[in-house]
Length: 221
Image (cartoon, rainbow, N blue to C red):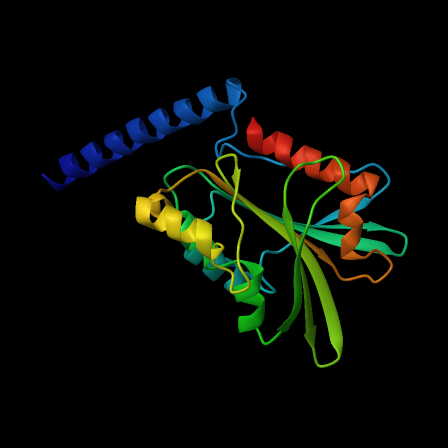
């Protein structure tokens, strides 16, 4: 009896693995990434290195579990003395709500790590019509600047100083229940640890423009 049960379990496992392999093979042949989003970090003239999501493997696993990413990557771009980092997090439709993502924007996560948010302003690229947040932090005499934006489907989510969506739009979407809809979402964060390339360069730097176009093209596919 035991041997028959083991044979049955083994046969079912083989069948399940076969179905899964067939589905994955079909997706790849169709040219559709399993996550629905994939970014190839290529920027001519820049060296690219993939970084861990967190400072160590343990924190990386916790971060992925809490935020439930469908796709998440962290890249560093370097060219001579210039450098910047790009953190991409993508959620498939049905994964998380806009409200849940808003709880992990830089305004919240960085201040929880002890940094002071000294300045927040809205900026945009000269040709890409997407409002972005420029944040300037400080900690024990050191400064850090970053730019980020958050998309829910094709709409830009505008966050207030506390990291939550701005009050007017927040109230409207809260009353309609829209904040709890689990839409397709993308959060892009560009961090500028080198003073030789300021965060304001996102406004008109041609390489920044190419980078943003590539990311948005990948998102819209």
